[in-house]
Image (cartoon, rainbow, N blue to C red; front, side):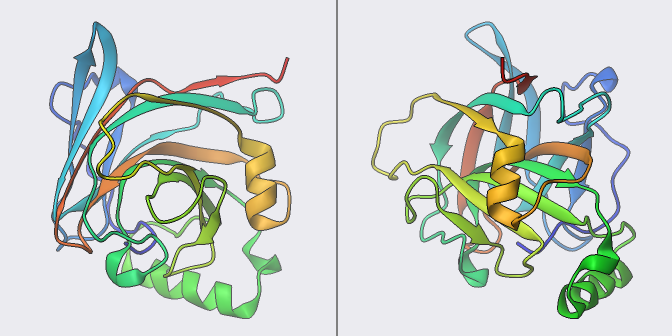
Length: 224
């Protein structure tokens, strides 16, 4: 999928609590949207994502999150179905069953002309400005854990593989703990600007298949 664009819809997924400030963000007005449902798994809060030849994000503002104080992020997800033939480095097959997405602000004027031109074109196509930079933690069976790949549509989106489960592996909860500041610095070659939003994404639009994942709550913490 390309960098997220389109109008943020003022709606909540089925079962969502409005206080959570989640927003369902489509890629564009033509693309089918992934279904996100607030659920429980073994008594714990969870968000279930089902993608049927679809793509969209579930995002929330990063209000109160200061990476200088709480740079560590921890989460769990359960991948139930991955889109077949997916390859996050190939624009025609760029799908992933599970992604954790972080959106950062920054000074566009410092970017190369090519990046600024792509961002300006994306701004014209959507009603929301394209973010300065986006870092995604993703699952992929084709690349080893630790791989950092640019999104095939724009270099302002980088993907870091944290889960390399094969499709024939029995589904099980996977736990992660990452240093968001260190990972951003590795991916973009500089320290991050302010974190402005974060969220989830499961998609299968490019492969035309299915994807399903369950996300447990995401936690931010200090390095101590």
